[in-house]
View 1 (cartoon, helix red, strand yellow):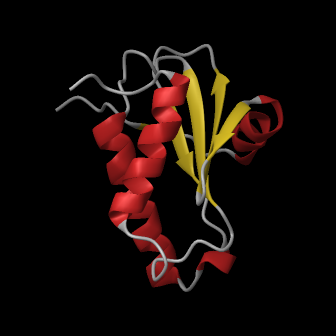
View 2 (cartoon, one colour; view 1 turned 45 degrees about the horizontal axis):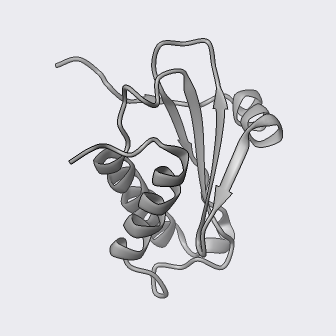
Length: 117
């Protein structure tokens, strides 16, 4: 099976996206996008320790990753680096997967990255 998801791993790449990229925000999530010269989309999910203990942070990352997988159109996102950051006060006790999904859907539709269903 061909790999369709690529991770943005290097700190310098993430910092470049945060510094030079365009951003959109909702109540609990911020998304930064920056063009790269590659033929695929790379994604990074950055969750702070202020978002709770490790179990809660990993659950939040899984929710974001699944919502991103269901929403983003890879053809429209070609050549983009995307960094998704939940806000510091976002905890899994306060939000649900549906909240994360709807907020990412709103951000991606504003950015014209959403998949046509």
